[in-house]
Image (cartoon, rainbow, N blue to C red):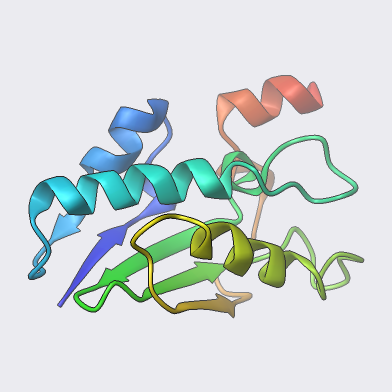
Length: 132
């Protein structure tokens, strides 16, 4: 069983981002909520070196699954397959999520479908990038 944070559907505030989790695990709901919130906070510390917005607000994180054994699977993409940071961003994501207390093994999967588009960005990212 897993708890899932569907990042692409969560756009308004940290509380909303963790409240839309699919909960069907052996972990207590309050622990799932804590882990989810802290994982989102950790993801928001990771920045593409060429873009002054964090990868979560950019919409690069598609899904986070928290497993019963506390391992975490992250599905993410990049703004383009030719992104110069392609080699380092998945490792940065893995390290950020692994730094959350109580998280076990972290697996980051880089995907290209669906392709990233600017409409995945939150209002915060649009503001930082002046893309209104």
